[in-house]
Amino acid sequence: MPKATHVMLMPGQALLQFLKLEAAGGILLVVASAVAMIWANTPGGDLYFGLLGTKVSVLFGDTGLSKTLLHWINDGLMAIFFLLVGLEIKREVMEGNLSSLSQAALPSIAAVGGMVVPAAIYLALNWGNPFTTNGWAIPAATDIAFALGILALLGRRAPASLKIFLLAVAIIDDLGAIVIIALFYTADLSQEALGLAGLGVIVLVVLNRAGVTRIAPYVLVGVFLWTCVLKSGVHATLAGVALAFAIPLRGREPGDGPLVRLEHMLHPWVAFGILPVFAFANAGVPLAGLSFSALLDPVTLGIILGLFVGKQVGVLATTWMAIRLGLGVLPDGSRWIQVYGVAVLTGIGFTMSLFIGELAFEGGDQSAAVRVGVLSGSLLSAVVGYAVLFLASRREFHTVPAGRP
View 1: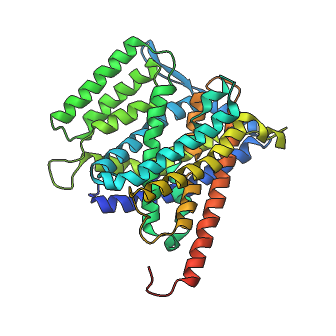
View 2 (view 1 turned 90 degrees about the horizontal axis):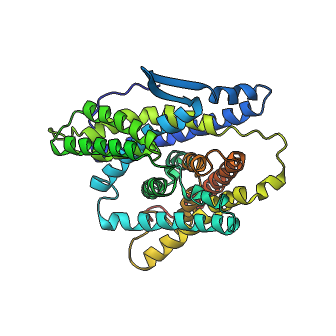
């Protein structure tokens, strides 16, 4: 695991570091997923599922938490992932690629289209079944790390503006996923725990308004907030987002912002630790007895078509509409075929889609259908998106005269 160091990063440097880590982390996600799939389908598969089902308890006297290892990963480690997502969103909104209306308009419109159309496709295929329609948001998500990892394989063949456009769309997509989780995927609520969580949020706001720039007080309150949110019935990962939004962007010295420091510290751990662990814990699908007909299950098919068809149609159509209406312009140095390739890559749902699937069918028997759908749709989007961008870059390399943009 890479060692986190204290380094001052300017906004442009932070973006470059972000892109590099996300790209490398995306490749590691693929490896972790492949290991999980192989292990789950070997004679030692029972050990894989037994490991994830192991009970792990944290006790303080007579009180504490007792959950399976899988739940600790999905509720605990993923809260740190959502903390990082929240930090990225806040930084981009305050001083990055989403800091002005003109910058945010095109990726925002594209992201909304990329959430609405996949959800509509899934609902159309599952209409009339109140249980399976609960998974409507599964194909609406984009995995930043995986998508940027595929785009990074093209190297300099892909304009930097395309990477920034994909990053902006995926970040807004993550914000949409956070809102969806908060509004639609909560269990029965505990008023007492919610009240304590609200108290924790108030303390975070007070720390922010008081100008506290040390990270430790925020983290201590964040642990308390996470515990209360976990007990409340609202998904615990949202505590990470609330904590992120409370951490100040700027410190007392120029370039010494607590938010950027924490983001830089967490990013290697999330990219090379938490996300691969999550992928390893959630990608293992036993394939014994699985036939082609399983792909026609409404849940599986809805996810596959939502990710592979819905995402590209939604992103491309709304991008075209926004540009036609004068709300944005094509990313610098790119062509429509390349924007189409990026639209296809947004269909790589993977981490976020698997996560929402766990919430949508918690305790149900749709786990295999969700995993097969997410893995199939994401794989199709990755392969086709890469092929489109690779062929487009080769054509451009051979046909565009020197000096022409």
